[in-house]
Image (cartoon, rainbow, N blue to C red):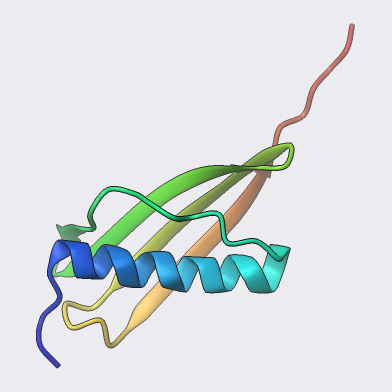
Length: 83
């Protein structure tokens, strides 16, 4: 497989993280974002998106050819305090 460019890596990352978000939270909130960055020989894409009363934070790491990946998706709730 040929090496991905930054836009192709971004597109693949968005698909992967939306698949994970759908399995966990029944949503696909990531639609746009910055291109992936080349970091230490791999593509890295990161983004965050509002979700309910919190935020979803995503980081996706891809091999240069997209063959291996790591998807990290975390949900952060915003806690409010009424005084």
